[in-house]
Length: 94
Image (cartoon, rainbow, N blue to C red; front, side, top):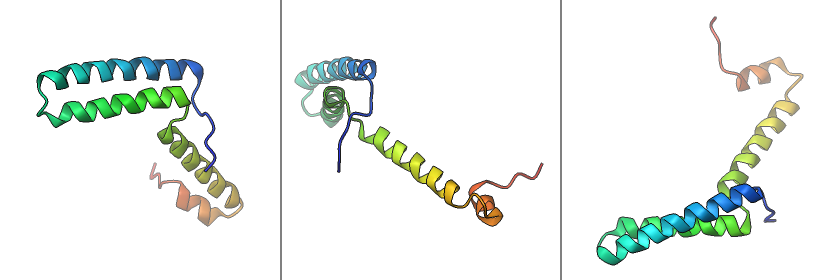
């Protein structure tokens, strides 16, 4: 798998800022109530956002882009066939 950056500089800086904020908030709450697992999950999510900002790669964005490419590829292959075009497009009774 080739990983190339798929988010911009501004988006990366926003992810780093929000991730560090969530990470600081969750660790401060985790110190006060260490038995709560939700704060640990929030700390992990904040850490993931920081890592996405540093690396400038978001796996969900890559998955969405790949899905869009697959849909466009399928529409391009069946562009001449009317039956295949009806399979892709939903039925509109109006």
